[in-house]
Image 1 (cartoon, rainbow, N blue to C red):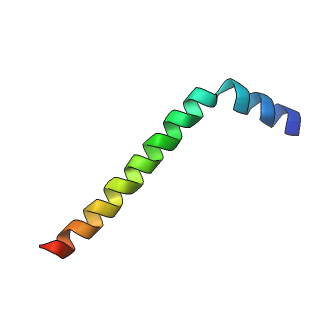
Image 2 (cartoon, helix red, strand yellow; image 1 turned 30 degrees about the vertical axis):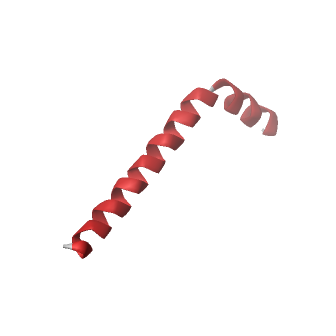
Length: 40
């Protein structure tokens, strides 16, 4: 099972990086969206 996970991680490395960047940008947008009304 560990070998399969390593193989999957190796094959989909580019996709995982893009997904991680997308998740980080969504978290940033959520944080700014919740923080912005407090300033006004």
